[in-house]
Length: 154
Image (cartoon, rainbow, N blue to C red; front, side):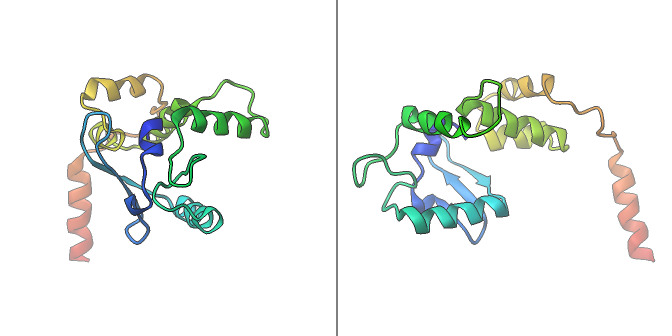
């Protein structure tokens, strides 16, 4: 997610039952759905119990005000100081890592484009240059279909 999308999240945008986040009116004025991991759901539930936000998922200094992207970046920098991570990391680094790891796990580029909310697939293609996808073996869809047909016959 983009920093601006994170600070625009409302509690109502989190669907814990379906394990998704509904991102409304992103950079290109389109809504999209992003999946949540079990770990993220647990973390968000713990956060909500501890912080008790009212409207925005991440409250700023004002009671019903939201964080700024600058504030979010500050929180990240402060937390990075508590780790052994030496390389320079920013909010966009997290988005980039997310995309790269999904590609390395075999996610197709069109689905990744949709998850990232890119208007143009050429923007998403940039991540292909960074991802190390050599370990993913190409396969024929016929093998998958034929394998399913064989399983039904057994």
